[in-house]
Image 1 (tube, helix red, strand yellow):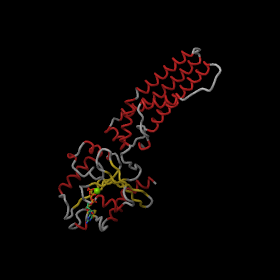
Image 2: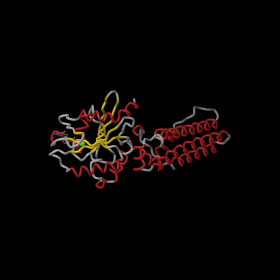
Image 3: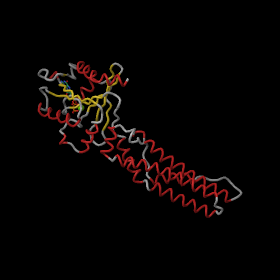
Image 4: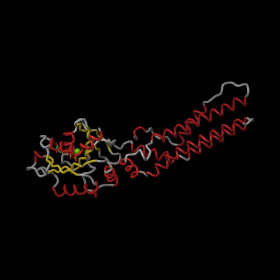
Length: 323
Ligand SMILES: Nc1nc2c(ncn2[C@@H]2O[C@H](COP(=O)(O)OP(=O)(O)OP(=O)(O)O)[C@@H](O)[C@H]2O)c(=O)[nH]1
Ligand SMILES: [Mg+2]
């Protein structure tokens, strides 16, 4: 959504562009000087009106409206910036475009009744001044929208329609190995603009339905209290993605974390995310037997089919509907 928005220009750039284009407007020879000047001013006004109104309206159209924003993106935008300000800034751009239109029509009409060239030039100066001030008043809104766009452009695009699983668990438990085992291609790597971490998004194709799997290193694998605000925001936004969480427990002999700390994180995620959680034991080949209902080894492939079948069953209603 935000990736399609070009860089947002600042007031002065919009004014400079429009005025410089208008200054190139020239009327061909006319025997009567007043007629030529009048026509030239009229054309310059139309040119400025055209380029400024076009630009402002284009921006309003390119930025997704509040209603068009998926809750995930809406929530992020609100957390990082301010959704009310976003709405206000967009509607200010739109209103200014209308004001410029009205003002241009009014000036072109007045121009028709001005007989003296000096008066025509005065009207033109007035016009330029007013348009420059109308667009100048938008500067803080343009800069605000520019910052929203620069940030949101980097937020990973998550397919909202596909049934989605989020893989969580302590570091090194085998989340990424599991993701590459069950998803087809190399996962798409996307960085959150406000964490140094990336999320990995993979897709499983089964029976014609597409299922999205998101691996979240550094986003879900540490206690909430250790997190900075940015990371917390990233987690809170993930709550808005309709999904089921696969929580991996490493009960293997080589596990870095004890069972208690893994259980603590499980409970914490369960409480914050408020989503269905599936407990899965990883690294079965290195473990002393099965300790969870679902146990897998990304290395040998043991237990994978069973787990995937279970996962598909959980979303089959959803994926049928999506088809
Ligand atoms: N023997 C064995 N090793 C595994 C298995 N799954 C993962 N590993 C190994 O465990 C290590 C960590 O695996 P990752 O998949 O990177 O774990 P992760 O949870 O994504 O780690 P972070 O992204 O750092 O949180 C790697 O050396 C893997 O090769 C498994 O089923 N069996
Ligand atoms: Mg990983």
